[in-house]
Amino acid sequence: MVFVRLRPMMKKEKEAGSRSCIRIVNQRDVYLTEFASENDYLRLKRLRGRHFTFDSSFTESATQLEVYSTTTADLVEAVLQGRNGSVFCYGATGAGKTYTMLGTVGNPGVMVLAIKDLYTKIKQRSFEGHHTVHLSYLEVYNETVKDLLSPGRPLVLREDKQTIAIEILGSEVAYTNLLRPYLVVAVSELKSGIVAAGLSQYRAYSTDEVMALLHQGNKNRTTEPTRANETSSRSHAILQVMVEYQTRDASMNLVNRVGKLSLIDLAGSERALATDQRTVRSVEGANINRSLLSLSSCINALVEGKKHIPYRNSKLTQLLKDSLGGACNTVMIANISPSNFTFGETQNTLHWADRAKEIRNKVEYCTL
Image (cartoon, rainbow, N blue to C red; front, side, top):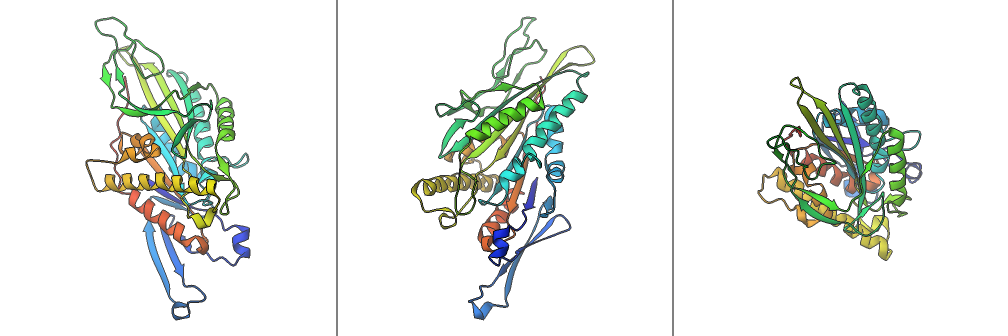
């Protein structure tokens, strides 16, 4: 599912004479208007527009809770049922992606609300079975993968085939790539996936523990001031929450469900002139744009039904392979600015989101 969120006009944009180029109607339809330049006298009164329709579109007055309830709440429930879910924000620098995902202390974003909702639901079901929650937090910066919870050497990505061997002829066999062995009656082999070798996983028993880990990881994340945003995220951040649910069925056989929720805050797509000309920032911007271009290429290939999807073109797309083309419920939130000063970036974001609507994933349960 694809959603669009419009941020409010900033004070400095109003003071500079910016006009709104976005109009949202019926909570779904987005109208983009291009105004002619004041110096273009031949086309001064001519307007060019474009209409887009999404699963839902949020105006600048939408609350964090409204955005979470509409986009992500159902994914949290699905993860507890043994399915995988992914949410990621896309948009230009300064469009409000990090606010949507992380928010503030007073207005928490999707990541924080999802974690709180997850533990609330687990507490409500504590009598039904046993839940275990592990999480990891990483960033992709300049095509290097880093552990945000345990900073150190760059992590290496590798393809990992998750084979599970379980109780054969009454003997207990530990299976690989899940958090610990259980004695259950089933044999299964999961599809291969990309993992970051050496990525730390932390077991979290409460919302407060997750919040502390999230705060720790965010302090380690790469952010720098640019001309477009004073606290611009210069990396893609991925929070992965693995939930194991252990219970018994009517025949008293042990059933283990494993669900994974991935929450992704992408770095902003940008133009070099809109950010900075300093060497470090320009290199960062080039790498950000390169990885987002690879993401767009993968989306186009998936929509067109091509056999080869170029996931290997960037570290970001390798990590998002399961979210884009795997057995996963995926939500995309495109963040846009109302200012006509950023018309080009807004138009690109809306075109990207419109294209992403055509992706169709096959959802599978992971029940052992």
